[in-house]
Amino acid sequence: MNQNSLSTDQELRPGESLMSLNGNYKAILQTDGNFVVYGWTPLWASDTWNKDSHRLIMQSDGNLVIYNKESQPIWASDTCSNETSQKMRLTMQDDGRLVLSKDGNEIWAAEKK
Image (cartoon, rainbow, N blue to C red; front, side, top):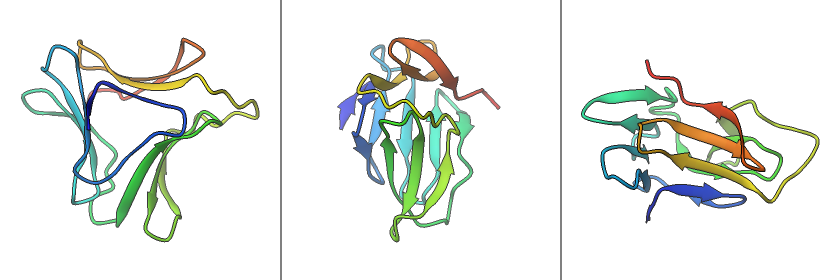
């Protein structure tokens, strides 16, 4: 998958990534289960290595979630809302920020470690 964003109900599988348009930053669901944002070095991580991560999905309820093979959540952005939206978007920006937006408004960002 060579794109810079995920929209509602789209997902990443292990080994798939989002790449900033300028090519300097990448958010990847690694095969070890960790979801990591990279520049020249790791900038942020979900700390889910060795937890059997199977997929990362941008849900319509506003939550970005990593599920294991048994469909149990093992990490979430904790941005769930009672209002669903088909305009959810996770974007790997050219400045290295991984941003989650709802209806065009930022609701979460991966903070650099």
